[in-house]
View 1: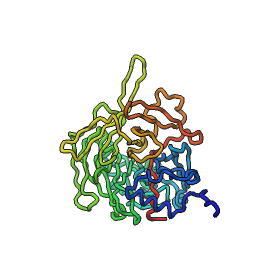
View 2: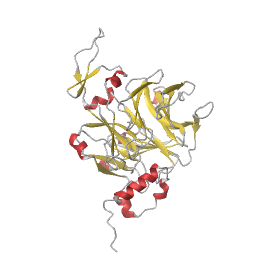
View 3: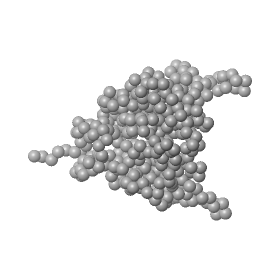
View 4: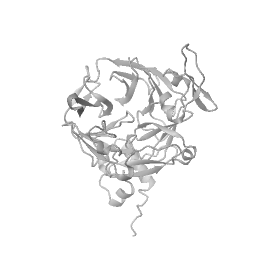
Length: 402
């Protein structure tokens, strides 16, 4: 029999079957041993390892991703109508899906690997008001009305597409991937300079619901952990958001006793195996030499403990952490093939001091959890100069919208 043609990757029905297995919790390690034609045709398929999403401008009809495992870039087409409309900005990467917002504040969840889409409720004046923004919609576009010294709204100016995140959704995080019917999960949004968050039950709610977190400072990041959302402010204070997916009355419970270690800078939070992790750096400043050194550190906490507390992690075993610098949402896993274990992969170097040779080219920062030391790995020459928006795990379950 003639050899199958693998040039376009696996048949779509097989990709969907594998995606369903992964979505159900099947270990990706089961799919690591594959033939070389498959590996060449679908760069992310052998290990389902995380890839980095590279920036794309208005009107782009493709998204470009960079495979750290393969050391090369590949692209996926955007749906035809999205390509025709263009003009969308990313406002989140979560559970293998990309959140896109247009100039009208309409939000679409897109699976860049399958083209599946799910529509979220559009933002409205209430969402902007939660961030103390006075806006109105005129001819389909949002207009900002600055407040003058007398407390009155001044003449408005149109909000550009590039400014939309500053007024509506800084980042959208999912509790889980949408199911085949475009439902089955909750989306929670970080709002600009606000102690409130916004959430919706995907495929069920027709509008966003605002929720006060009762944190002293503005919410900086959101993590879904043990069936609940955690709203975390810019100082590391945490508020637990409960009763959201069930449709009951949402509640928030601040945890002032669980502040992040004070010495940490550049904190990122993520969930892995039911535990909450915080990734940060310790900085040593040498003023006399006009330089500084830093090392990466990791702490974890089990929120189910009667008295939860942060514990320093010196050995994470097989765990690999992927930390995004553009978006706050990060993730970890133990079934990531051909990536270093007990390691943190930063989508961008935290500091460029001391690595000036890479200043004009994009690169990864790879940190060893056990030692805190790091190394810089430049991208392939064809994609140098592009800063990644963040890491994303392939989710091949097609879902709805194909």
